[in-house]
Image (cartoon, rainbow, N blue to C red; front, side, top):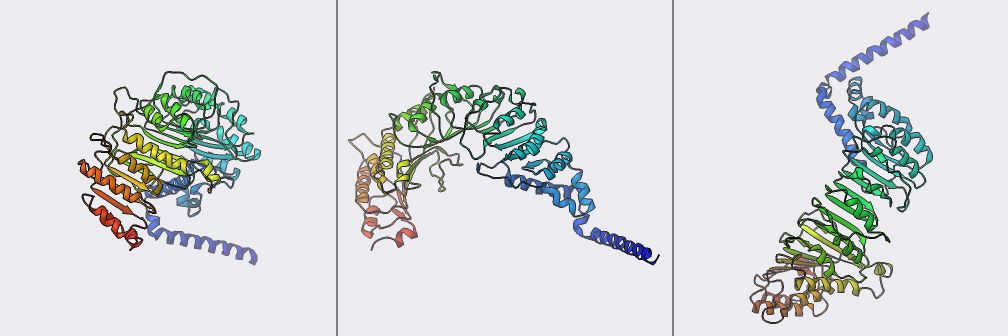
Length: 511
């Protein structure tokens, strides 16, 4: 009897302590927050985790460990918080390689709310235990990102074709740890019903992305399609705004239609790893808006086509119009590369990217030499230099007129001492009327080591331009080395506003 009384007393004491703790916690300011405020905090927690892991462009992301629900932690704080969290289905909609332990919990607690799913099927067990179960809820998935091995592609495609996807807005499909490959896919993906789909990102060389159900796309990112397949798909995407091609174009023996594909709403096109010849072929078959943003990463610079051909197909607009460029940047981003960017602004943002976010930079061309990367001490450094000279001369000769409308007011050259000779040749005035870059006012030379006659030749050109009433107004040196005091003085005499040197250049100048 005494033992039973002791147990009862202990239980009563524990309950009393619980009540006291509950009352004490109730007096804490955070416990007096309205439910609406707590719910906003919980949603921020869930959203932070969603942004931290989902919608990443890193194809190497490995989600093998899996994630427990983001708001699981708040359900363990107190009964009140747990009640609020469990009564809000939208807190349980993120499924990011969620392990089987929590998958059923998330699917139940999310009720009928739209799901955001990111799953990696790195094994048959994950495919059977998790992904099969998740894709049963395909009709309420809003964002879907799948990474599968080539051995599971067929099975996953069957699952994707088993139901419609009326709520799907974004679909990403990658092959896990594998190169793009062609697989047999059904034509009934999503049973032909994905009316809200606007973003498609596929790492697979199959014409899954050419289905008519993708006609409402705004964004398309596809890996190494053939040009005929791509053009066929684009004809069914009149509302497309962003087009990205990864690894350029694959070879194809299929005939290419002669008529161009109209893409009146396209805002940007980004292509990496494409040859100059394929870039010319691609742009020649697209009817692009005048204000399009183009970013091309070319490798290697070989083949029958030239940059004049590339600029010609870019400049073919029915009304003869084109972008009005105000500034030009030539930069050497690495030992094997050369980049040229054209901006509609009088200045170019200092942060270089071959695919810039700056809307003023309307055309970016980066060329890199694979041979130089493989053999850094080999005889391949002349190819980027010739490329720079070639581009500068084409611009100077204003070919074609439609593309290079407007006048360059500023030019920036960064990290490329060898290219100053090409610029000097382009700026030189030949005859009494052949004035190149007549609106040029600012020239900035950055991160350059002067070790030859480049500056003397450039000064002679400045004198010549001043004599023809088209002088350079500002010459800027940034992060340069081995300028002499005599050279600085000589330029002071031929530049309208004199020269401007940063502290680094002054410190590394010769006495």
